[in-house]
Amino acid sequence: MIITDTTQILTHLDKIHALISGSYWAKQIPKSLLEKSIRNSLSFMSVDDEGQFQGFCRVITDYATFAYLADVIVTEQERGKGVAKTIMQSVMTHPELQGLRRFMLATADAHPLYSIFGFKAIEDPSILMQINQPNLYAN
Image 1: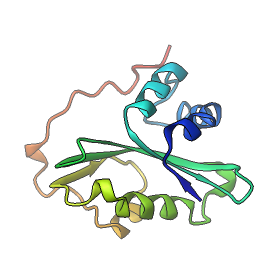
Image 2 (image 1 turned 135 degrees about the vertical axis):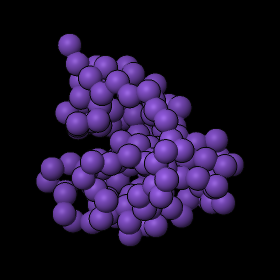
Image 3 (image 1 turned 180 degrees about the vertical axis):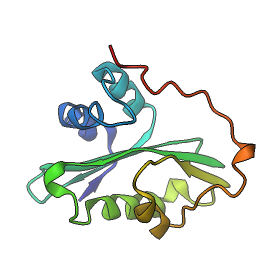
Image 4 (image 1 turned 120 degrees about the vertical axis):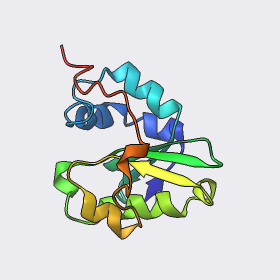
């Protein structure tokens, strides 16, 4: 089951934090900062029939023209079982995310998953710029 209610999602903050703080993209992110990011995003969480946490992602968006997919992650024991696909299907069909001009993401290793949903490499990466601080949270 997919949950988008922030209050319900935050009841699993410890589990979400344990996963994301060990990821390559947000290593050692403080729990308070992760909570703030969830509160300020459209988040999606997958739970099983017993309400056990399976996976999570969030979308940063203006709900009109632009969105950025972030923090897609699935627990180790649920990987390879279609949880990420289920989460992504919910993201892509969410009523508030329809008709966007641009929907972006960054990934080092999940290109096959995202390509199923229409994401593709930037044709002209010279149009994009960034400030990237990959070790910002590391002590």
